[in-house]
Image (tube, rainbow, N blue to C red):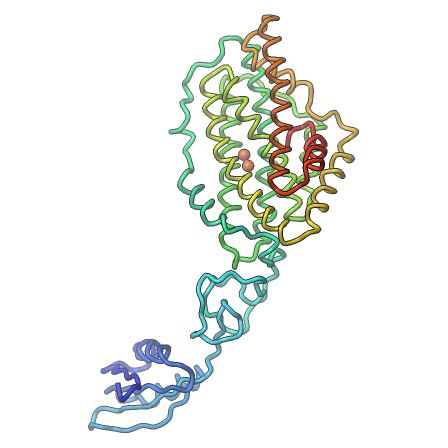
Length: 403
Ligand SMILES: [Fe+2]
Ligand SMILES: [Fe+2]
């Protein structure tokens, strides 16, 4: 150093052999307008440095030759062509890692948050680029929790566990699996559609959606394997069920889709999975229900947390969400809701046999299931901030298809 001035000795290195790396590192320790001394013995040090400075917006000020083979050159830091993702306008020294912006700029594109972004280049359009539309501070923790809790169906599930010896009860389980698969398909497709619309600046939101998609793919896998376990044909898929799911696929708004799919639908499924954990006739199906429910509770938590934040900041959102539930109800009014095969299969599954006494028991269990589903929806809506009367009304409007 000369006084407070930094210096760098590049030795024998030329600008054709890596000298620029050492000079670049040194100059980025300075503020704009400050200088560094560059010393070296390469015969073309001065020429290489002059070209490099021109290309990078720095000023080469003076050159001295303290020794026969050595040159010392003064370089003043100029305005480089870089801007920081943190504020989009300033040079490298204003880099501010991991500050989440209110609005992510198109020119930041795929750049890592906090990176210095060279000016120019593509300006991809990510529709979900406003923090308030998608953000929750819980996203990072939920992603790490999900990544740590991924399970392998070949290890976590004992596929050789005994099934119900009653073929009619087994057929009921298969019908419920068939129903679950198409609902899981909706839960896979909806976040997949939004994932590509989230600006990469909000990487935690992308990560939660990505791991959710992986969860749903695994759910489809285990329910499909369970359905095919005996080799018997799988169950039926009703028009009403598919129409109900289609309304989720057609929803273009992120908040509304999260509300209908995750708060109302997956929230209701948590109760259904708990029912299967208690009432499925075989340990394998009970085990799958437990594993899937754990994943689903994260999906519901994510939606609850970003929607709570969003509703707090946007006073119109509650009425928009309420309207979406009402419109969906009106749209599905003409459909039969839960198909008879699924309803009867749930009763038979909980009965465990076809004796009238057990069917009566299964019937009561399914009535309790419907009540529990409604109660849990009402509580969830109240937790989001809906007044009690609205929470009660909206909970009851939810599709009879459950999802
Ligand atoms: Fe799922
Ligand atoms: Fe889910």
